[in-house]
Image (tube, rainbow, N blue to C red; front, side):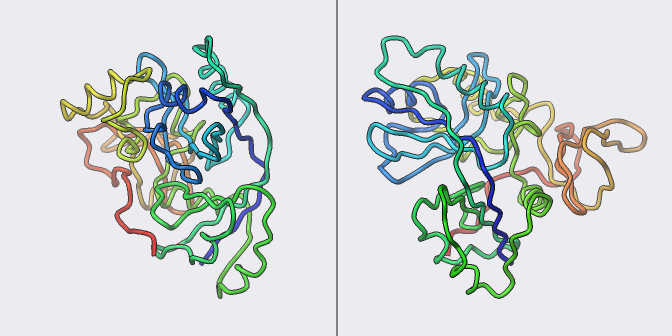
Length: 275
């Protein structure tokens, strides 16, 4: 089934002659080599290595980049990103602005990729794990023709989209990611958000050190089936607390679990490729 949800979302633009160079110096992924029209996931970190936010960076033009969130975020997350990026913008020819845009979030509710007719719509961006099963279409888009070609499409809102996020194990800002507290290695997204060949950026030392030593965080994000819990509930085994639930969707939960505990599946990039 194809799920299509339209919502208004905040986006952050960084524009100007130094926009590419500045983002390259601040973000965990390789922005310098982004071609116009392409995108990548990235982390913005504090100097000590804690996560400020997870987002998608889109190269709209050589001097214009969009920071887009592929899950709903509140104003505090947007504000934290703007504040962090603005902090070191000294003698830099770039401007940071925030706007609200329409985004249609298109998701496959199976392991099959989204039909190419959706992915070829103007301003369609790969979303979540970027494995072909999730895209965001930014700006006003009429998808009636594309949806009519999908036998079991739906435009249900809210809960279905959240349940899909949980199903694929994608961490959300404000849920799994707490600004200034979360360690990148705990989230399972380092392979799709970090370049280990680019130059320096704030927080790089913690990411590089944990990767080079093969270290894991004290708790890692897991997808757990059949756990009847609410957000914030403790995860227990034989009466001992081993984790906490962060998100709930249908009969699955996401939660951080002690690294030594064999429970659920650690979230990680999906192996399936776009069709």
